[in-house]
Each structure stands twice: as structure tokens, then as C-alpha cells.
Image (tube, rainbow, N blue to C red; front, side, top):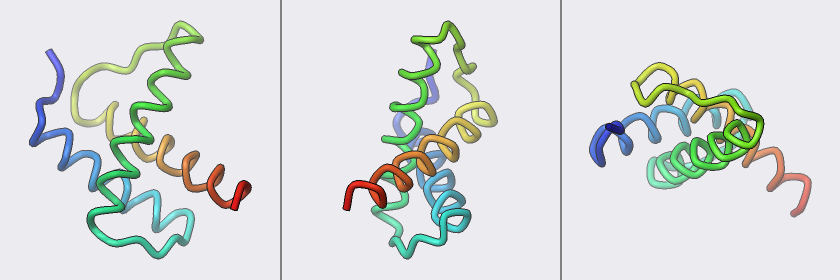
Length: 80
């Protein structure tokens, strides 16, 4: 059982906001949510390839979302 849609949006928004603060990116609320959710999906996929699975609860997914969103911001900056 996952977090659910509303919880994913909340955790994604929080993760994206924290990542944008860490990476000093000037993003708005909507982009923070997108960054957090996409970042969590990307990093969860990378971790699963390595045999590591984060629990489907708020704290582990928040940490994965922050790290993933930071990774997405970093890759974006390197490409553009």
C-alpha cells in the first residue's frame, strides 16, 4: 500500500521545496510538487536497480524525494 494521491502530492511538494532550497533553485509551488514526485520516482527506480527499496511511508519517501529532486535539478543544470 502506497502513500495515496494526496499524501504523494504533499510529500512531493515538501520534498521539492526542500530540494529547491538546498540547490538554491527558484521554483514555484507547482514545480516543487512536480520535482518532488518525479525525483522520488527517479531515485526509487535507481535504488530498485541496486536492490534497495524505500518504505512506502512518509519519512523514507520524503528523504528519497528530496535526494531525487536534488538529482533532477542537478542534471537539469548540467544539460541546460
